[in-house]
Length: 607
Image (tube, rainbow, N blue to C red; front, top):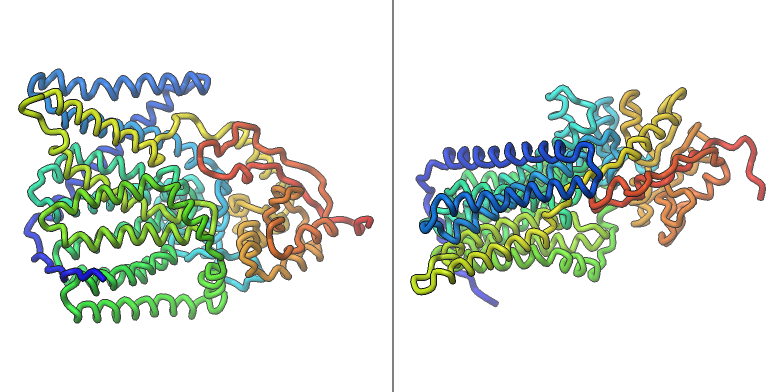
C-alpha cells in the first residue's frame, strides 16, 4: 500500500481574494453578455431562411469572426506576434462562439410553454404546486403523486421565480436552471484558478482576462454538454446539484490552500445541505473524511469534522422524517436502493465519457508537475473518484446525466493543466521559429477537436418545431369544459397550474416503481375501476414501451388491462411531425408521441 505523506497546509494567503473573485465574476459576466448578444444575432440571421441555408449563413459569419480576430492580433503585432497568443485567442473566440450557439439552441427549450421535455419536468412543477397549497411533498405511495427526488431544487426555483414576479412560469423555471448552470461554471472557473495558484503560484496566466474568459466559456459548455449534461436546462435536479458539487470541490481546494478552520466548518455543512439538492451529494461527507484521513495532518480536525458532519446529516434527514414520516423514506431512499446496477452499462457509460476521463487524467498529470503538487494530489484523486462513482451509479439507467458534475470537475483539471503547459508547449524556438508556430497550431487544433469530442458543439438549428406548439394546444383543448381534477394527463403539470390541482397517477412515478418493482398500484387500479377520471390522455397506450405497463417488467402492473376494461379510446392527438421537437437534444421523442384519448365505458367490453 502506498503511504502518502501528510499535507502541511499553507498559511492563509494574503492575496485580496474578494477582489480577485469580483474580477473573475466581471470577466465571466462579460463572456455571458457577448455570447448572449451573438445568440440574439443568430436569431436575426435565421429569420425567414430555410434551415439549411440559415445554418450555412451562421457558419460563414462565425467562421469569418473566428479567422478575423486572431488575424487582427497578428496584423497589429506583426513580427512580435506570439504563436501561443494566436492559438489562445483562437480558442477563446471559438469557445464564446460555441457558447452563443448553445444559448440560441437552448432558448427554444427554455421558452417552450409545457413541462414534458423530459420525464422529471411534470413532477418538478407538481412539487411547487403541492408546496403552494400545503399538500405534503411526500405522501403514501398509493396516491402516486410524489417522486424520488429531494425537494430543494423545485422549492428554491419556485422561490426565485416568485421573487421575480413569475411564480407560475414554466419558461422562468427553465431560465433559472440555465442560471444555475452558469453559476456552476463560475465555481468551476474559481476552482481552475485555485488549482493554478496552489501548484504554479508564479504563473501569470491565472490572472489573464483571456484565459479566464476561455475557462468560463469552456466550462459553461462542459456544464451543459450534450453527453453527460443534456438536462441542465430542464426541470430536473441536475443543474442545482452541479452547483452543489462544484461548491463542495471549491471548498476542498480552498482548505488545501489555506488550512482555515472556518473552511473546515463550511465543509462540515456541505453534505447535509447538499442532500437537500440531491441525495448523491452525501458523498462529500465520505470524500472530505478520506481526504483529511490521508492528506490531513490533524487527527483532531478529522474527528471534529466526522462528528460534526455526521450530526448535521442526522439532523437534516431526521427533520425530513419528522415532517413527512415513512413516505419520505420510501420515496427518497427505498426506491433508489432497489435499483439494480449494471456493471456493463456503467462501463459503457465510462467509455462514452472517455474524453472527460482523458481530460482529467492529462490535466492532473500537467498540474502535478508543480513544486507544490503534493498538496493537490488528494484533490485530483477525489475528483477522479467522484467521476468513477458517478459512472457506477449511472449503471442503473441508460442516461449519462449522473456523470455530469464529475465531467465538469475533469474539465477544471483539463483547463488548469492546459494553462500550465501552454507557454512551454507553444514558446518560440530560437533556432527554428517556424517550429513554434507548428507546435502552437497542432496544440490549438487538438484542443478545438476535443471540444467536439466533449459534446460542446451544437448545430445552430431551431430544435423546437411549430408542430410542437400545435401538440400543446391540442392537449389543452381536451381540458376545456370540465374540471382539471377529472382529467388525467400522463406527463406534464402545466395544465393543472391555473386550478392548483395536485394530480397523481402520473407515468414517471408509475414507470419508476414498475421498473424497480417497488410500487403498490392498487390505488390507481381502484381509481380506474371506479372510473374516477372523466378523461385520460396517455402516450404509447398501444405500444410495448407503454410507461404504465412496460413489456420488460418482471411483473405487469395490470394498468393496461384495467384501462381496456373500463375505458374506451375516443380520439387521438397526433404525434409531433418530424423533425421531432427534441432533435439533437439527447431526449426521447416519446414525449411528443401519439396520445390516446380515453373516456369511461358505459358497459363492460365484450370478451
